[in-house]
Amino acid sequence: MKKDKISIGSDDLYPVAVFLKEELLRRGYDVLLHGSLITGKVEPWPDVAKDVAKDVLSGEAKTGIVICYTGTGVSIAANKIKGIRAALCYDAETARGARLWNDANVLALSGRLTSNQVAKEIIDAWLSTDKIDESERANIEKLKLMETL
Image (cartoon, rainbow, N blue to C red):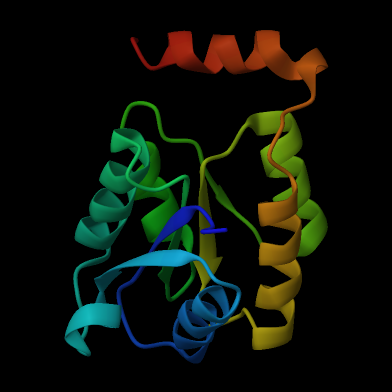
């Protein structure tokens, strides 16, 4: 059975970005690539975040992963796009919580700080948590209303 599509983009060829691309392919995901994962050179982090976010919003990808040096820039950029809830995660429990309680649809990672082992733990948690805690539904709706301010 074919797995969901995942969009992944990075502003540079960080070891963790290359590792995640290969790990997702190994797991059988259809992976949409952006930024340096295509060009092999440094790309603007706002463009990377925008391209991944567009894949998620259009339904082309079920979820997205964005990576820059700290993870902060791509997180901010992705969150500028209505309908995107990007979460900067440094460990598996944060990633699980972002999916479960915040209905996050884009994972942001630091290319500098995230080791391959930690990245694997994070995506395990991210990809295995696909339903939100219904007690948080009202808070998610409040977030959606804030997008109109």
